[in-house]
Image (cartoon, rainbow, N blue to C red; front, side):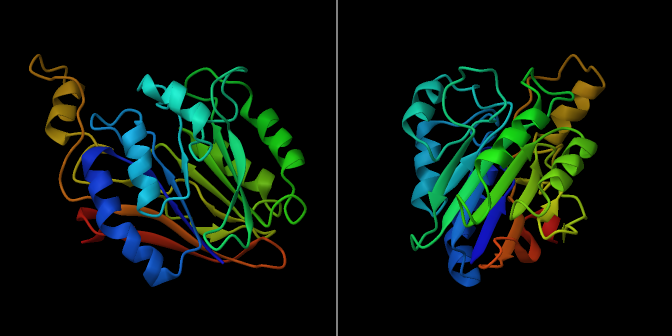
Length: 268
C-alpha cells in the first residue's frame, strides 16, 4: 500500500505540473491513494474552485486538503458542503462549512484511510486550539480500529508546531506532513514509533519565484516600490513536491518514506 502526499498546488503552474505528471506517477509508483493540498490552486494562487477540484479528482487525486486560503473563493463555501473529498482545517471556528477529517477508501476499495487537516495557531488566521483538536482526532480516528491508515496534513507557519504535532501522532498515524511554507524541508524520515514525517513537503509550482509568486514583483513589494502590484503567481515550469509513503499493512504505520521532487527548476 503506497500513499502519495503532495504539497500546496500553486496557481496555473502547479496545476499544469499536476495534470502532466500525476497520472504517470500513480502508474509508475503503484500509488494506492493520493492526497493534494489545493488551497493555492486558483489562477491567482488563492483558494480553490469547484472546477479545479473536479479536475484534480479526474486525474487521480483522492482527497484535497487546504488551509488559510480555503474561503478565498466564495463558491467553495457551498461546494465543500457537498463534496467530502475537499477538506478544510478541522480547527476552524465551530460551525464552519465542510469537514476537517473524513474516512475514505483506497483506489481498490480494500483499505480505509483517514485524512485529517489541521492548521497552526501561530502567525495564522484565528482558529481553535490546534493541539486540543489534534487530541480529539487522535481519540476519534484510531489506527487499525477505525481505519487502516491515517494521514495528517498540518498547515502551519512555524516548524516547532509541526514537529510537536508529528511527535504527538507518532505511532498513531501513518504519516504527518507539514504544508503552507512552500519550501520542502530536508528532514524526511520515519519517527521513533513508526510515523512518516516531513516538516514541510513544499509546493507544486514554479520554484523560480518567491514561494510561488512572481519574483520581480515580490522584490518590488519588499522594497515598497510604487510600481509593485498585487502578488500574482509565477507561471514557469512547475515542480511536483511531496512524499511517497509505503505502509505496513499489519500496523498501519510507515515502512518506508521517499521524498518526491519532480520537474521544474528545483529538480535541475
